[in-house]
Amino acid sequence: MKVIAFLGSPRKDGNTDLLLNEAVRGVESSGLSVKTFRLNLLDIKPCQNCGGCDETGECIIDDDMTGLYREIRTADRIILASPIFFFTVSAQTKILIDRCQSFWCEKYLLRKPISEGEHGRKGLFLTAGGMKKDIGITCSEATVKAFFRTISVPEHTTRGYLGVDAKGAILDHPTALKEAFEAGRKLAL
Image (cartoon, rainbow, N blue to C red; front, side, top):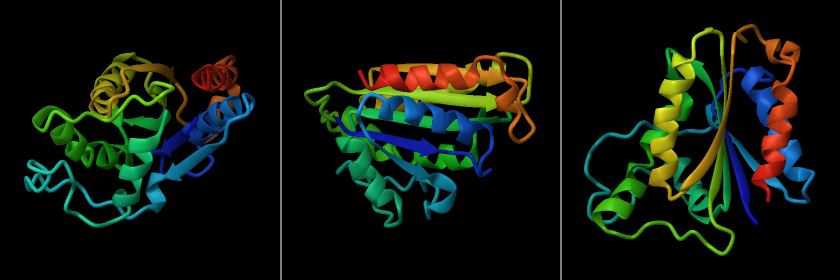
């Protein structure tokens, strides 16, 4: 089973990074490996809404997203980890999601969704933010749900944590790291 993960946080060793590390450990405890992509280190241009993918389902922009399309298409399990910025995912995460417009065209215009494969496709969304109100998770979740649906991941779990803003604050959360590990372990099933 192929498992990939996208880290959408620009902050190395930040709260989202720590959550993702625990989820990856959970997956790996089941005997699988995870290929992780740090979106902030990749050259991914924003979607230009140019219509280039409307008739083919393939994006015409040639950058690091080209390789990610293959990874997404062939993954059985996908982890998306992003901090909450202004009630939604980070810019790095949003660029990845927006560039999946080509998958949307392929699925809904051309009627060729990504195959669910022999293991089915499942996802996990990890997020953390400094605010204390659920609206940040609710708004982020709406975007992520559309992303997962577009790339033919019909089922995903969300683990979101609020009130964790300072770098490393997630380490003081009473359950977050344990829950991220367990979510990763369950994802591998």
